[in-house]
Image (cartoon, rainbow, N blue to C red; front, side, top):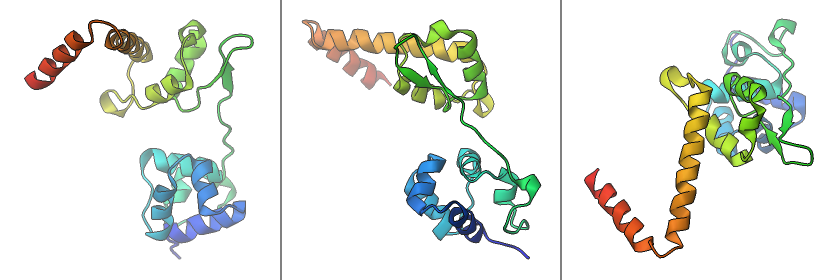
Length: 179
């Protein structure tokens, strides 16, 4: 007997004792997105499917396969733990690397000095990087590019509050018009 994604999500949510808002929070997706899956019988795709399956502790295959009924079997259950937070330095701010792909986490674990000066916002920006084929091909390239862009933005901010503000604005305006 087939079970719709709506029914499966409701069962899994009830099993956890969560409301829709808590489910979205645990899945780290917007509430409106989660509601569309549950109310409109839409199947999650890509990253959203992974996040929801992790929150419920089931495989993506179980979540998306209409032929798999509730409750999930033992092979459909998984235990997922978020990667731990990494502290930059003693007494420093903890940076959560869990939004990053495994390639990026390995890169930062092998190069902890590269995390110096990074904020959680920088990690979030890097987590949205998509290279060829949908995933970053070289974390070092993207980290260096992010650092260069951040430094350029800082220089622009300093110019904007200084005496060369008009010159920078006209330069940006002419670049914008040439595109």
